[in-house]
Length: 177
Length: 208
Image (cartoon, rainbow over all chains, first blue to last red; front, side, top):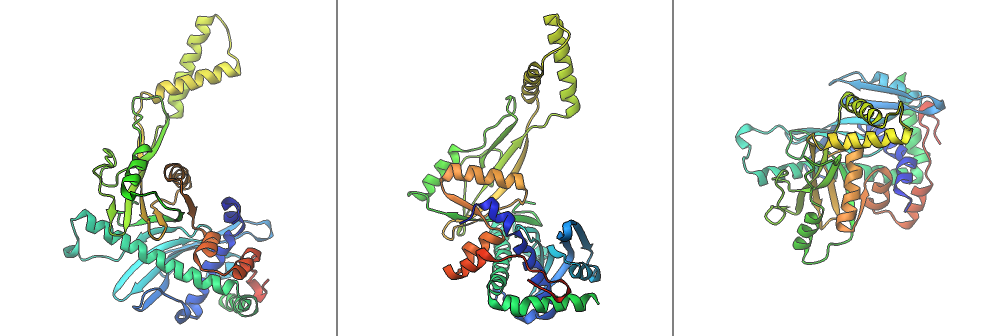
């Protein structure tokens, strides 16, 4: 395997392409996303999305914040060549809702907020609390792994350059027009 | 933003290799060998070491519960002292004046000044308490997966260094390349394609 530091820098664009692909999939083919849980899962953009454009020697960062914020500015940035570098995701599974942030270059999970719990169900037992938090972390890491696996299989397939990337290009054009 | 907080952040790692049997005793022994060392009242600037999850300020790995379900849980503690710049400046100034007066000289060389600066810093470090930072580690030993409950670069670098030293095991950060290369079950042929991919240009309907 490549040196870790070299691999981190050389391929960090893959993480940004992954987040951009995720946005594309959420907008155009929600049913096509592969989720780890049998229960129906819905994934929507949360309250923050960050895009960066490093092309043509310019470093431009666009941050869109707030629930239900208009994403037109982000789509315009995509058209200029930006990629998503950070995204907040809201996951709806059954009646439960939880959210977390994903950073493209590291795939770190940030600000994971587990589902609201009924105070009557809260446990004072430390071991129980730890196990519950581990279960929440497990859900998020498993979801990330499934989605990234799906992306990578597409990314290294011939279909990427022949079908998926052109479709994303058209989506970007249409979204910004 | 730790494990029991209402929101938390984590970095993911893969651990390769096994700890020699008897597993739990070896684990406790190795954690004890690299346990956090208190540096209050000492001239040290920083101390990095393992501590217990439930009692991070009174670690006792012989008694601590470290097994939660199928996971091992313990913490990394980084204690650091910081001297305010103005305090260092004042004490250095006083020390320089004293040294010049004792030696009957009008100036110090650059090396002498640096040595004096280090000496003053050590003296001040011995007088100020360290600020502790605690980061939980959750390790699914059987699956070789480890979560570190901080995404700060410096804290992750400390984890990687001390984990390798403590357990003599490879710890690999999971980021876009390593996740694809090690965790997506790619065949050798697919890995060859992965190693050769280059950035896609989506905009304007054109793409590479």
